[in-house]
Each structure stands twice: as C-alpha cells, then as structure tokens.
Length: 218
Image: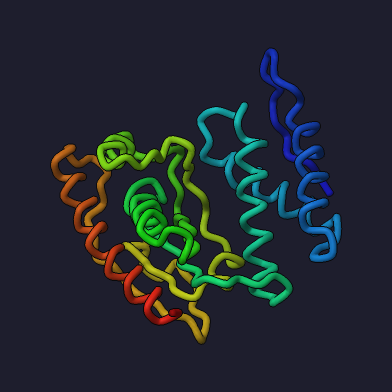
C-alpha cells in the first residue's frame, strides 16, 4: 500500500522506518487476530489521520502506533475474537481536547480498572487545551501524554456505552448500545475558574456512571 509522505527532521529517523518497526510490534501482539496487511493498513491510516492536525511530526509514529493498537483492540473486541471483561465506555466531543479527555481520565480514575475508557473527537484539535491540562493536574491527574484522536467506527462498535458531548450526529448509532448525551460547556476559550467548574460537573457525572456500571456488572 502507499506510504504516507512525511519529511525527515534533522536527527530523527525516517518515519517510514519507525512505522514499519511499529507494524512488526503490532503484528506480534495481534498474531492470530489480524493479517499483516490489516495491521499495516490500520497503522498507516492512523498515522495519516493524526498527521492532518499534528503540530510536531517527530512524535507521530509513536502516537500512530498507540492509536492503531487501540483501534485494533476495539476491532477484535467488536468481532468477538478478543474478550473484554469490563464495560467499554466511549466519550465523544468535537475536538477531543477538553470535555471528553477530562471525562475519560475521571472515569478511569474512579473505576480503578473496572471500566475501560476511550475518547475521540468528530473534528479533533492539534492538542489538548492548556487549561484542561492545568485543572486536571490540580486533582493529580496528568493528561500530558494524551492526544486528540479522530472518531472511528471500530471504537464505536466496541463500546457498550457511548457518551456524546456536543458532537451532534457525528457518532454512528448501533443497536444494543447505551447512548447518553452530557450537555457540558466547551472549555475552549474559558477561564481557569470556568474550566474548573466544568471539571467538577464532569466529576459528578463520572462518579455516578462508575457506580451504575460497576453495580450492574457486579
């Protein structure tokens, strides 16, 4: 298949070499689940999708590997070839730079492994909102390694609960899933105090969701 055209920065290995090395690692991880061609296609598609909004190309191969790994896991789960023992929650907002990232971190924190969480955006931003990073650090949750990800069909199919936050009809509807809409303000352009208020509202919703899902699956 055609490979993404990416410039080589001084002192940085060719991204094609990094992607092929990533494909080999993913091939070992998903052996018996997917053909090599499928794994490579997902990896390069993930790279291209992230490249559309990325500010720094040097990190893209690593981020693409992480993104492709999660997508392939979701695909295997939706096909029933990979079990998931805890509920799968998908959080979707527009940019995946604020609300959905905060919600994912807070649900994951309170669930303590009892729920698996993914987040995505219908039109992902290049990076997380700086105010979001700051207010989450105030509650000892480090989001500095997170990055906005585009919404893909595979993660929707793998989800048990899909929570939307102002993304309209961007999320496809599949039977057998629980769909919730959290009417939350977008933190973009808001002051720290305003983003703290949004964080605290998400915190309340996250605790309630964790209690409900863990009791349901007890």
